[in-house]
Image (tube, rainbow, N blue to C red; front, side, top):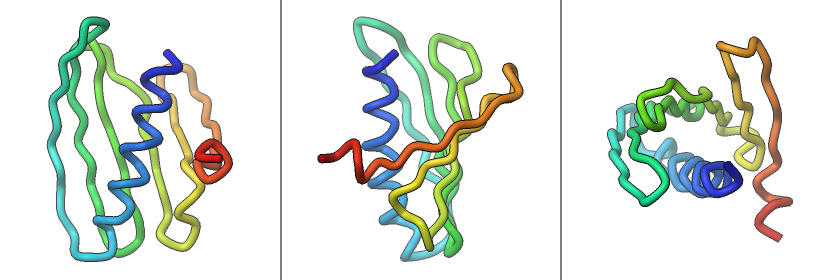
Amino acid sequence: MRFFSLASAILFCSASALAATADGELHMKFTSPFANGEYVVHYSKLGTRTEGNIAGHPGTIALTKKDKPDMVYMLDASARTYSEMNVGEHAK
């Protein structure tokens, strides 16, 4: 699970760079020896929203705000929880 968290954090950082250009969507599919899945990144001038599923199971929804690009807010609807992660600290 740490692999997916790290990969997601890297994905969110690069997706937040796209938010400066225009509104849009980025669709991605991935395969690995561990699992297959897909992500959709919605980006706008306000930030990004990333939704995905791994091995057919809905994953968390990650939000980043343009005014706080190092913070990622992760929502887990099935568990009714959220968490905050400072990706700037994890990069160190």
